[in-house]
Every structure is written in C-alpha cells, then in structure tokens.
Image 1 (cartoon, helix red, strand yellow):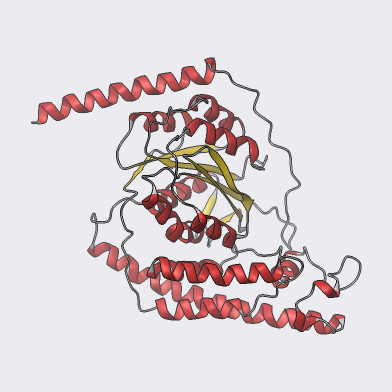
Image 2: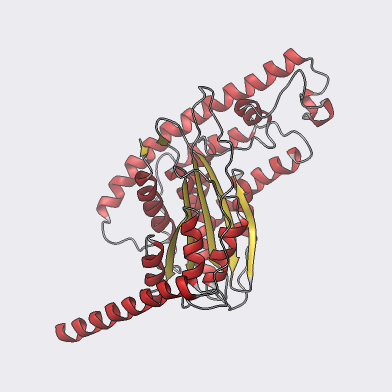
Length: 389
C-alpha cells in the first residue's frame, strides 16, 4: 500500500512540475499585452501627518453551478477576513482596507471595484447566484489586474484570491500571462482550489509566488455560540443609531446597513456577531455617506467653504446653526466610540472562549474560505511589516 501511495505522490509531483513549466512558458511566450503601470497616487495621511498604508484584496469567485457552497461561505465569513485587520498596523499606523469583488463562470464580471464601504461588498455577495460553466481563471485575473485601481506604493499589501474547481488553465487568457502582469504591479495571486488538490491550481501558485490553498467549499462553517454573542449583536444594532446619512446616497446607504445586518443574521448565527465586530473597527469606513466618518477622516466640512449643503444634511440637522451641527455630530461620534469600545472588549473575551473551544476540537475543523484567506493574508501582511495586536 505504501509503495502505491509513493507512486501516486511521485506522479502528482511530476504533473505539478510540468504544469509549473507550462505556466512559466506561457508567461514568456503567450500573447502578452504590455501591463499597465500602476498610477502613482497621493498617499493619504493621518492626523499626525503619517502615511496611511493600504490593504487591497480582490476576491474572484467561481459562480458556476457547483459553487453555491463557496458563495455561501463568502457571504457569511467575509467579516472574519475584515476582522483579521482590525488590530493591524504598519509602522504604528492602522491601514485602509479596500475590497473588490469579481465573479466568473458565466463570463467575467466586476461586481464591485475597490471600496471601503463593506456593506456594499455584503450586498453584492448576497446578490450573487450560480449560473454558467466557463471558469476562465486567466481572464478574470487579467481583468482584476487591469481594471482595478491598485496602489502604486510597494509598501502597500495587494492581494488577489481566486477560488474555483475547474482546471486553472481554461479560457482564452493563459494564466501565466495574467499572473506575470499582476506581479508587475506588485500583486500576489493566491489560488484556492475548491474540493481537492489540483496540479494546475498548484502550478498557478508556484508561478505567482502566492499561497496555494485547498478548501472544502461545500462545508457548512461550524458555529460555536459564545456568552458574548447576544450583547455584541445588540450593540451592533445600537451602532446604527449613531450614523448620520448625508447627500444623495445617505438614506439608501443607511437602509443598506440595516438590510445587511438582517441578511447576516438570517444566513448564519455567527455571521451577525462577526459583522457587528467589524462595524466596531476602523476598517468599517462609511465616510462617503456618513457625517461622523466623513468629519473624522477630514473629507466632510460642517462649516465654511465647501461645507455640506443644508439640503444634503439628515432631516434632524436641518435648521441647526454651525455650532449646533458640530455639537450634534460630536455627540454621535462619542456615542459610537463608546459602543465600539464595548464591542471590542467583548470580542476579546469571545476570542478567548473560541480559542479554548478550538483546542478541544483541534484537527477536526475543515478548511473553509475564511480560514484560507485569513491565514494567508496575515502572513502576507507580516511580510510587508504589518503587525497585529
């Protein structure tokens, strides 16, 4: 029996070498349009004038008929990926987290460009459906590389995670070509093979220099109830009351926030808890529609030149003078900070509880999308001098 396993292992190893060689050849010999150089961007600065690092993660999901389980995992576990960066810092500064989303399987489609508005990511994930059967990995990697606004700063973390279960080499764009273009921009491609080890996916990771990950996409992520869950969820709902939607998208975005809470709660018991934790972290940035975040980041003014028009203010703030506006936003900011602090403290207790439970079940948990992405992203971040508390 051991000799049979050895032969099988040797065959898999030989196939992986052949695949890696074909990827490398494709990268050189394939039709390779000149990749676009990343545009230099003015780095954002914090209140102390320090550069704010970026963490950019593009998630590319196969939405063909067999991938319902993968999409369900993404819907309920995306908040664990967000929470992984809640305590992250690079040279003492917390990063700006941006997520982008693509689907492929019935053509290639960008669902969302890079955004800090994580409720939009949740909304798009819950809006995905399975259809089609043309899983073109090279094409979707190429699209994400060329279409998204990637940072040009080499110190920023730039990752692509692509998940699927058909051969990595399908489609009109050779994966080696797409991967080389991504590497040219400092982007690391991490292939996630769904269901089983696959030599073509492994070869893709070898060429990309990223992690090769294998998950059970049909596994239902185990839920462990903790004593802190109910209070974290309640406080997450209280947070919504501190948001002040402004402008054309304010009311719709506030409604989306509430709707995504309900979807998370219905999808999995732990999803609303991890989502509430995400809402307590700096990475949950809604400055484009919320006055509290907008004023905090410096993108919104309540007085003077360029101040928000009165007609764009939430109804309860119209008719206030400038000082009243500032005081009202400050009150909401204080209330939010207090709730967020409570959630973070409860989450620390929750994490200790979960760690103890994990010890009891060591080796029993199956590899799922959240585990693959969080472990891999953290390792890549640490290589870029990010630290985690």
